[in-house]
Image 1 (cartoon, helix red, strand yellow):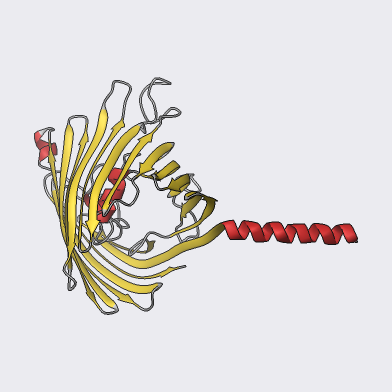
Image 2 (image 1 turned 90 degrees about the vertical axis):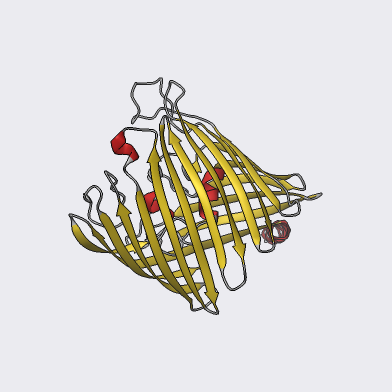
Length: 348
């Protein structure tokens, strides 16, 4: 009995020491909406959907103080589809982020799957955060590229606090073989990525540039992204804009966004205009452009809970077939896609 009591006391002491040195947090967001999308040629469709105001997720993160200004941390974050109770990770449990870090006065070294610098850039200067009925990803032609938003096997370095200057550099290693590419073993994962972003945020202003390059075949062909953007908070409204260029081999898409968010107490109004312009290909490819207009409203019931509604319309040109997610497939080339969503988001 005495041995049991002694062991219990030691465990209690160890637990107290561990809790004093480190912390682990469970966090997440549940976002569900009723969405209706009407696509030219195939009619309208109503769905219970996800990710209108924020991307649904759950995760665990923790930090341990190692002393001398040095800290270790981990972050495991999974996509979830709360309307059907599954993950959206294409077989990956922690598809949004799975990293381990060392942090200190030198900045942060982070290892694992994470947002690419060019992917993080797209979120920063879009009032709809690229998602939902109004997000700019609706008319991003190459958003299906493996490293457009995130990269596996990544090594990242983040600058320390430098008076408003922020930055990230990332290299993602290529591992394995992609069965969707030609060949049986010579072609790598189309995920060998290198990129970075550099910005300045101080008070009302935030400006940044980004660049990313990914190998897409065994001959050295690349998918490249370049971005420049900024925002300015006037208090009564926050204006933002960005220019983003995607180049896949010889084909190129340029996107321009102009957006605004207007806080009104517990309310917020959001709006954006996005244009996609294709160049560098055949006459048909170069004519496949699109415009998107979006208007949204958010009512914050508390710091963690919000109701929202968004309207959006995509106007395609030429052979373009951009459409809002959730609609019937098979939109007519050069047609229109209109949609709205009404949703509820809760974070924890």
